[in-house]
Image (cartoon, rainbow, N blue to C red; front, side):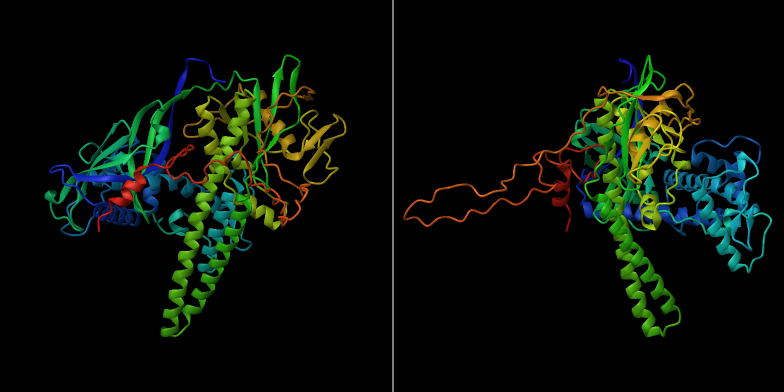
Amino acid sequence: MADAGFTALRQFSFTTRPYLAVEDATGAPIGLDDLDVRVGWMLDLISGAEAQMLWWLWQPATFDVLAAGRDSQGRTLPMHGHVAAARLGWTPHYPDGVYVPSRVTRVVTAQAVGTLRALAYRDTTITALSARFDPATGRLSAPSCAAEYVPSGFARGVARQLTARSRRTAGAADARLRITDVQAPPRTSAMARLSAADRQLAHLTVTDAVMTLTVKLPTTVAPTGRAQWRRVRVTAAIPPHLRRRPISEWHLPTLVLDHRGLLWRCAATEAVPAADVTSGNIAVGVDWSPSTLGAAAIATETPEGLVSDYRGFTYDDRGLGIKLARLQQEGQLLHRKAARLTRLAATAPPDVRAQLEEKIAVLDAHREAVGIKRGKINRELAFHFARQVTGYAADAQAQLIAVEDLTTLETRGHGHVNNNRAAQSARRQAVAALAHTAAEVGIAVVSVPARGSSALCPGCDEPLARPGGYHTAWCPGCRVGGNRDHVAGVNLAKRALLGRNNVTRRRGRMPAIRVAEHAPVRKCRDKNGPTPRRPRHRRVRHSLPTVTPRMGVTPKQHVPAPQASVWDTVKPAPPHGDACSRDTRPSPTPATQVADSMRST
């Protein structure tokens, strides 16, 4: 665990909804429906100006400047997006006669520059990969040096884009392709990141259990002057589980509109126990599995060497993995059907084309709904998995949690169904959730190399045998084995313990161990891992009770109790939906009922 008395700052995000809005100058209440309309006017101005700015800047010269990081005078570009845009002379344009405050322009330029900076790496990579691309075969040649290496999945996606462009241009090869040659400007969602502005546009006040946001909003769809931008005080409730947390700073939210109205995407900074990577002697290795999300095992460093009981913990996804696979198949079916109708509508008569376009719109709406549902289930699955693994590591008094490096991890050779299911799993989201939940108890999460973790013996580093099929592993030399995923977890935990003094830290990324070292892991007969919590089922009566019927009384028919299922547990399951924060919320936010009751008619 972390050293006592040392703390670190951690940022986390949560969402909430307003339940009260008033005019700042007069104090007159505003209906939440009217508030949604006014926020929608501001988001329309921001999204329209941002899209126009991205279209105008979608050229190679833009990415050359961002890759160099310097302006025309050789000065280093500032980190803040709106300051860098002002230095470069990038300004958005609005419809004629529309007045927009300069602080709203800051929001527009900050969001546009942030999007372009995120795509600058892709532009550089496409240029390097296009030089290795053969239009005749549609393949990429092998990299000549380590600097040209990119993840295989990313390279395949770029190869598909280059192949599509080669077909459009009849195989004409260009010496130097850019991102502007193979894809169109990105489409961004309508949002307002108020963190890019200052107090003249918005400021946040937190008192007790409520957050009050004072923000300027337009009073008409096309404001023509400063008087048509007025301040509004919007109040939202803080989720109950955040009210007693040691939060040092509350950040300005991002405003978005969904089917329920205005939504705040908030962030905060709190103090958590500081995690020390170098001082740990107990590590938990997390192995990603194609059948379930993951499994965990423990390795301990003792004066005699590394030991493990080779007994791990396998995560139970409660059937959500099967549901995700079903939704994925449904979304693919809707996509294929919409694509077929689109091809038919291209050559259909006008009246038939109108009918087909209506059907295509319905299919697209259904596919979008399926995608939203999959996103919610993936988020629930990721945080439930993170809480389970964090509790397992805390019970074992571990200081490290080792996860496989996702940049080098790719599922292959398990069949089309299992490969596709593993590729669509929320591994990266689960890693982020695990790092978030583990930081709360002072446990560090590091990434270790994934190659050979399931194929090599933790004791002698030799290939493992599969006497019982794919899910079993056995080393005849060391005479150790068991579940394949548990053995892989021991390997990952071993690599974390051996490489904890050579950790690479990069800004914005979790600590990483690049080199996989080897030391024999001895099997320990002593139980050094916690027993996983398992739900206890209610007792079920499997036989009829022996009751002597009384004379003269009609005997009752005794029906045995139904057989218990895996969902019939005494211990209640954790809440499945968490619409307010990344952490577990014991009860729904009471402000939702208040917000629904205050909707104006």
